[in-house]
Image (cartoon, rainbow, N blue to C red; front, side, top):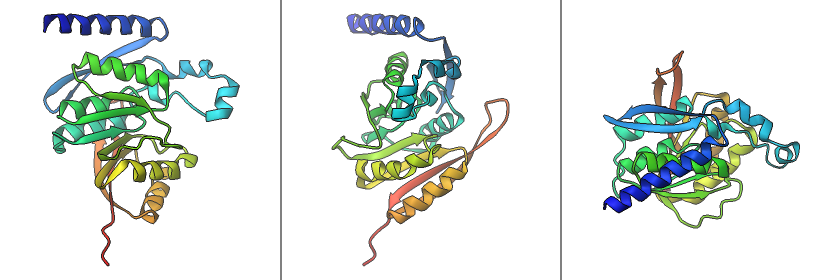
Length: 236
């Protein structure tokens, strides 16, 4: 037991050292469900823009949104901790960023697969899982071309509805990744883009239940909606 703890501590230190050599880091404490968590992220996500070559941007239009902890992720994590029974359920997070929601879901007893398109993000997800002493699976996933064959009880996503080109691929990914009776929870800071997404979701046979919330931990309050998506029941 002690040997396992020592190995985990060594892995954590080595991973932190490797990340610190590449990024300016910040580590912040949060409380969810009466439990204290700590999350590592990038101090200034805008500084990462210089790392993106014109060729990479043309290929993916990939921005380093993953590097920052957004109000939607914090609000979703609080919702998970306080309102969702997850013990024994199989859960996936798409666009996980640094893995906050996945970490809290694992702490709640879910079997979690945390995914992001950015390989850089997944290193932070790994660190934050180790730091908070939870274990879950971590994989790269492109929601434009989902190759994962598994279906999940619950899907989480925070602040992913920021590009119009991604809206239909996200609906399609959710449809592929959810079990027939599964539910997706998407947190969004009430962007106009979310309205278009919800229209697409309804067209693709999803029912939507909104849970209005407010993030109050920053310099100004942020209104956040958490949308629960379930498949419409066939009434025939």
